[in-house]
Length: 386
Ligand code: GGG
Image (cartoon, rainbow, N blue to C red; front, side, top):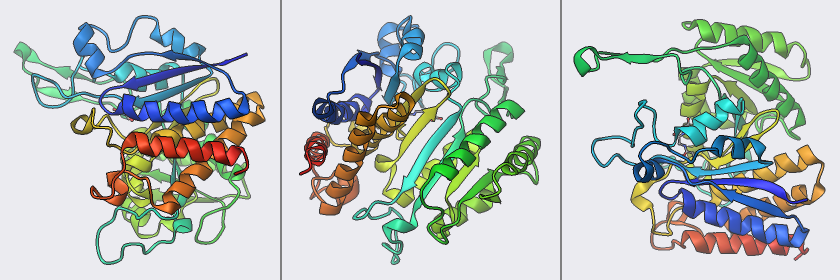
């Protein structure tokens, strides 16, 4: 039976990186004999501008929930009439439905973002101390609660006379969602083969602002309650503002970190600097029954159509998706394919070419499609034992 894959290319460079992800998926699937039925759903700001009332087609929700695996490129397109992205009539970003809509409707409660500096990649912090970390010193997973917090649809705007005077975003933290994501973090920590690079300790850090915010006090309380079930794992908390400088100054201390939605959105983009930038950073949106994998970068409208941007985050999204589905379906072919893709990414980065401008500069840059072709070929060679 073929697996059902939904692809949501989205806007701008989203479809370009998706093409390379699918090139790699197709290559490894042929070798392993994995069959897919691919349902490509158009979506995003550009779709909304063309269709006027929706950011994806009717019935897309059901198609996503029926899928074995969902891959997302990127959404968001500049408004032709104002500043910022195209917004829908309800004020939401056009592209909301496939991203935040899918996360909440499918209860993809854990946003899982591995932060790993691969050999050969220079981190993107400027200054004299570049290359101060060996690759093995940055190897953590940040987990962001994905369904509530500041993203809860409980706020609104007050616009007397048509002019907005007040805008309210309400941060909702529930016991249920906090328990789910915190337990997920401890379980993942237990499964990871090594602990923190600094000392090998298995450690979960809760990133909070519990000296001020009620929601963070509840989150921290639940963190320690659930933590009692994991005596083998060190429990650590960090105040989010202090965490940002520890993350950059001593990344080797961190193993698994868990936090609320908006804090997670911000600190994971910051963390991508440690791994070579947004072109290298992948995110999984994982629930009990569904999962969606994406590069964490946006649609980069200024680079769209140029075959220029880094497809590695998208290719790693395919790898993460294969790993997740392989373990869910107990299908070792998918696990082998995922391992071959990661090994191909590692060897391409180590070789230093072909890579895109963000990693090697404009002069030495390869095109997005050249990187995809090289990684697809290397993945196949890995599977064939070459
Ligand atoms: N590839 C991810 C993407 O396009 N993200 C757009 C976005 O607006 N994401 C919201 C979020 O991650 O919170």
